[in-house]
Length: 196
Image 1: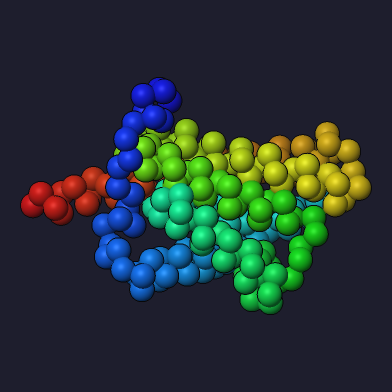
Image 2: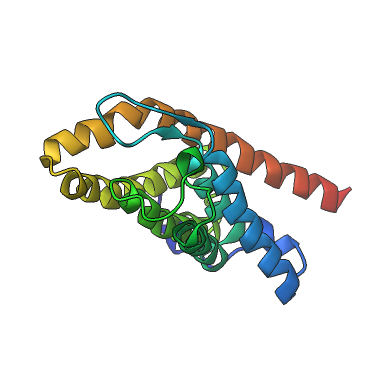
């Protein structure tokens, strides 16, 4: 990713194409949090680790890029706070304080902000740049989630790297590729619609 691409002036994100009223922004933020909660229910237990395979990160990456950093940060914060308060939309219909996986959920806020910021610089318009942005978002989630897992599980960092990152890499590459196709395709559709 070139420095010029990252430092380019702000461009609209997909959510900017929707009405910018308070009601619309509340609906976008709430909808994004609900999407992550819905995708969290795609949850597959992985032996030897409390971290399941879920669709959550796909929702975080899409929401971040589509909403921009401010709305995405709010949406992921809402997801976290409402889940702690009792809405059963964490992985496996859980709620409350998920000790071992809480670092990943904190990482969702940072990843949503990062992918949203990158999208506002046009990094959601081309496949390769979108994939790079998605990988950056996933790395942020792991940078917070893996050390948290090591501490919460009373295990070593190498253990947490294996059971909290390595076993999920293939799935995350697939999620980044899906976003890499979906977001630029949506922009092409928007461009065709507005021109035609």
